[in-house]
Every structure is written in structure tokens, then in C-alpha cells.
Amino acid sequence: MKDMGNSVSKVLGRTDIIAIGFGTMIGWSWVMMAPSWINEAGMMGALAAFVLGGLLILAVGLTYSELTSALPLSGGEFVFVYRAIGRRPAWLVGWIMSIAYIGVVAWEGIATSTAINYMFSVPSAVPLWEVAGYQVNFSWAVFGMAGAVVVTLINFFGTRPAVLFQVMATVVIIMVVFFMLFGGVVFGDVSNIGRTLWRQDGFYYTFCMVPAMLIGFNVIPQSAEEMNIAEKDIGKMVLVCIIFSIIWYCLLIIGISLAAPMEIRASNNIPLADVATYLFNGEVFSLLVIIGGIFGILTTWNGFFIGATRLLCAMSRAGLLPAALGRIHKKYKTPYVAVLLVGGIAVVAPLLGMNALEWFINTSSLCSLFSYIFVVISYIVLKKKEPDLSRPFSVRGGAGMGIVILLAVCFYFLLYLRENFTFTTISPEFIIALLWLAVGAVITLLTRWRRKPMDDDEMELNVFGERFARRRSKS
Image (cartoon, rainbow, N blue to C red; front, side):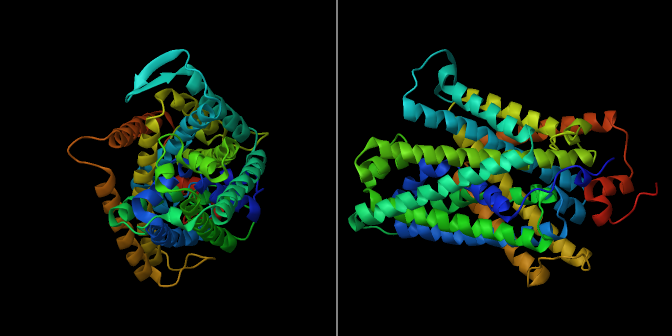
């Protein structure tokens, strides 16, 4: 099989990578949820939650940085786990991570419809069905569906157009946080912070939200083959994006805390938009926040679209998914079949209605934390298994540091489960994850039946290429 590394274009520089990583991590959820973090945890509690949670994600990012610099190949988590533990665990982690990425792609369509409806008060027309108590109207869903078509086309016609779009949209969301911070400092009031700076229960609530807010740095490894920078610098870019995102969220929390009192932050509509209206005494400013949120939707949508399609492509070239998903367009150099598949899911998602937004958020967070555990395990195993593997970006502390990170991530995972799920009933998130696993198992079995079997050397070569393969194909 032809190595994808010889087919895709190396067009991504440092600015592009930061836009992909940082832009992907800043989506729409902050528009809806940021004020609630402050109300629940207090300003200091919310800041502490993001700093501590961010440091934990940064620790996980260290393992991603080393592994990505050592194995700069599309596939990210799938490639790391395959190298360290083997094919079957790699399939499990890769497929679980694919629903994390696709889940975000799906929820951004729903978020787009929600934002457009807030801005223009779209009349309810063409009722379809009710999902989880929400009446889905085609007049509401069509905006998210149209956005999905646009993002699909951007990714179909080449990596470069998708990244240029990502850079421009990322600039806008950076401007939004300074808009809120400036407004809070100049026009707000310290009394808006409230008397309670820290609430323990709210701290745990916000702390458990951090993985969902910072998911996205792991898109960087997925596009590693398309990067035109030194491998050591690829590892650094992962950490830079995480640090930028932590700072961005902390500045946002400070700005919102100063901008409006608790009763305004507790709005049932789009809370941050109502905060902006109160702060600047005009609805036009709430529209600016919504526009910034829409750009956040687009950067996350675009980034996870890139991540999902590259992951599916990597699993295909390993022989674990249909060969079509690994096909590269001759002209545009993109995995176009994977793009069309993910795009199709994105187009359908808004038809599930606004209440499905929380399902996809929780599913993505759950699957991401699960995958982080396996990536850290892979980091530890490869330290022992392949000590001579070239690591342009190397983490100090060796396997011992990896064990500390692993224990911290496992604790975070268990805390997340306790805070977000009740085990007396089966949640929609678990149903989505289990159904996705079942679908993946069927697809993989059909693939093994229809595709020509690969021996170990051929699969090794297809996954890692000539440069990184541990064995060479005899042919």
C-alpha cells in the first residue's frame, strides 16, 4: 500500500499549527457555560479549576509532545498505542477517539443552529420530531446543516484553504476575550464578583468541565505528516496551544466576573451574550459575542474535522477500516472519502435537536479521558520497550514521570465519572459510545472479510512508513 506520507502536502507552519490546536480548543461552549462556572465555583474557584485542570491536561500534553515528535504520523493516539501495545488496543483507542472527534463535529452543527436562532429569532417552521423533550424544526436545523456542508467543502478542497480559514477565525476569538476583559475592567465593577470567591462543589463541577474545554490539542498529532517544521518543534506546539488556551479561559473568567452580577450571569438564554448586553448597555454587543462564538464554532468544527478524517485514514491504511477511507484525492491531497463520511454525519446531527448538545459534549469528554489513559500508558511502555527510539522532544523523568501522570489522569477520569454520571440508569452518552463500538466492530469484521489480509510487516510499513517501521517488508 502506498504510504500516505508521500501523498499529503507538507504545508503547515507554526502559525498554522497554533491556529489548528488553539483554535480547536476554543469552541462554542464558553458562550453558554462560562458564566455558570463563576456562579457555581466563584471567581477564584473557577480560576483554580482551570489552572489545576489545565496543568493536568498539560501533563498529558507532555506525553503527546514526546510521542508526536518521535512518531510524527497521522493517526495520533492510534499510532502511539499500536506502537506500544499492539493492534487490538490501538483499534479500541482509535475508534473511541474517533467518536470523541466526530462528537465535537456533530455538536458544532447544533451550536450553529442555536447561535443563528438567537441572533435572528428564526420562526419555527416545518416541525419534524421531538428529541429528549426538544421540538426539532427544519427551520432551526437547516443552519447547522448548511454550516456542515461548508466545512465539509473547505476540507475536501485541500488542507491549505482549511488552515487559512482556521487562522482568520482564531484571530477573531482571541479578540473576543480581550473585548470581554477590557469591558469588565473598564465598565464593570468589583462588586459583581460577589461575596463568595470559592465554592467547593462548584470547583469540582468546573474542574470536571476542563477536559471538554481543552480537548483539541490532540488534533495536532493527527496532522503531523502535513507539518513543515522540525519534529522537536511539533512537540513544543502541543504545549504552546494548551498554555494559550488556559490563559484564554482565565482571562475570560476574570472579564465575566467583573462584567455583570450573578443574576445576569444566570440567564437561561445565551448567558455570555446577556452579560455583554448588560455590560455595554446594548444588544448589539451581545451580537458581537455571538459572532465571536460562531467563529469559535467554526475553528473547533474545522479542527476536529481535520483530526477525525486523518484518524480514520490512518486506521484504514492499517487494514482495520475499509480501504476507501484511506484514499487520497489526486488533486487536493486530502482523504476525501473520510471527509465525505464525517461531513455526512455533521449534516445529519442538527436533526437531533438542541438537547443533544450535552450528549455529544459528555461523550467526547468521556472518550477523550479514556484515550488519554492509553496514550500515557503507551508513553511509559515505549520508554521501556524502545529506549533508543529517537525522541526530538524528550520529557524529563522517564517512565517514573509517566506513572505519576497516569495516576493523575486515572483519578481525573474517576472523578469525572462520579460528577457527571449516575449508574442507576444508562445515560445517553454510554449508549452512544456502546453503539459506536458495535458499529466499529461490524465494520472491522466486514473489512477483514473483504480486504486482502496483511502480514505483520506490511501492516507495520503501512502504519509507520519506511522511516519509522520497526521491520521492513520482504518485498
